[in-house]
Amino acid sequence: MQITVEGKTIEVPEGMSYLELSRQYQKNYSNDIVLVLENGSKMRELFRSVKEGARIEFLTTASADGFKTYRRSATLLLLKAVYDVAGQEAVNGIRVCFSLGDGYYCTSRNHPVDEDFLRAVQTRMEELVAQRLPFVKKSISVEEAIEHFTRHGMLDKARLFRFRRSSTVNVYLLDGFEDYYYGYMLPDTGYLKYFRLMAWDEGFVLDFPPKKTPDTFGEFRPQRKLFQVLKRSNAWGELLEAPTVGALNAQIADGNMTDIILAQEALMEKEIGNIAEQIAGRHDRKLIMIAGPSSSGKTSFSHRLSVQLLAHGLKPHPIAVDNYFVERDDTPKDENGQFNFECLGAMDIALFNEQMSALLRGEEVSMPTFNFVTGKKEYKGNLLRLHDDEVLVIEGIHCLNDRLSWSLPKENKFKIYVSALTQLNVDEHNRIATTDGRMVRRMVRDARTRGTSAKKTISMWPSVRRGEDENIFPYQEEADVIFNSALIYELAVLKQYAEPLLFGIQPGEPEYTEAKRLLKFLNYFQGVDSNLVPNNSILREFIGGSVFNV
Image (cartoon, rainbow, N blue to C red; front, top):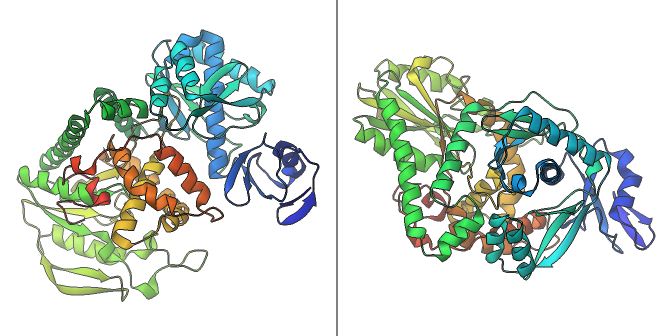
């Protein structure tokens, strides 16, 4: 039968697997082929059979989907090794909490984490890799899945399937050990060449090479400040009795969402109040500099922080760094010849420093407003002078980078990093990536405020992520405070807005595979009425109805 591979039509025998096909082409790729994209819209695992007339693209571990597949498969390998070393009870106590550096931070409730345990698990993982054991996919009924995982003490999975809409569940087996995973797997353990275990804090890290160099480990960068925020957010999830999607769905079904929402919002308001109190206690901190990735709710956070600053006796003045763009004709361009508005070179650094320094000296300054239509700064008589009980609340993607504010004294800056660090997981072994939560937020907001389609948001997302990797994430540990803007209930609210947008993407379109993945992901959640969301919530920035001008 005929198929198309890498743009060329070839003949292959009927019944050939994608695994066999990938071996013929592996020499053309520097990283392992781990998945195929069939007809531009359907992801396939390599154990699947080639279809007549299919157009095939190979995905390696250097691709986003291939990288996720590698990490997911390594997680199952870890749990199988824990099972072999310490038994089912130890497995039931393992929780994959969140990303840390390039790996996963995990905790163990039922077995002490020490060097002997980690050494034994790593050794067993390496033995399983050497055996090249297959990851076997099996479809079972929901009832069978609930019974199986209940019997084995994996109650978070049993609770998740209680709210399953389809009648079947796909589970994976590795040498007789069975678990559920949200997403695809590698063909066999032999592909898992690069991983390491290391003790960290109260648990351990399952570490991987970075996506850009999937066969080479870099220096482990634990991001200590970010880690403490993620750890505290996990504790919030436990406090609200909603650490996983299944637990959240149970709270929704039991009619507890009003209390959950109010408690989550109260926790967030307390955190913002604590930040304001820190600022008020440092009279030299006149420049409150706020940065964070796309769709983190920075604008709503800035408004709520300003309210708290007023309550602490300070008068805030909002400053948008976007008003300090260079003139359009002077804006740098990227490798594709498009204006690069996210690089530091797009900012009028000299003017920003000149005006902020003048304000610190107590001088009156005429503040610019950038006209995005004409591509020029305008001055409309917006005069500002900073008095003793006043502070500047400055928001922009480069605010944590001292090259933006190079001339301003460090003792005058208070830096805040804002990000939506999702504390909710699908279950104890399946993470929800923080980028998924932010992309759903942006999709909903862009459709509401700009008329942008979900297709457009998805197509732009890789470029958005590249800008964040270059301009925001490298500086997050420079912050005095990291604020987590994720709400434990938000995806249950956002799903009713996002699903119709995603259903508008058709098969065959480049964004269809991602849309299908997000729809499957959102299908885990029971819906929550958006009327329950307070009008000062950060979530209102995305779904509308905010009391703030966002």
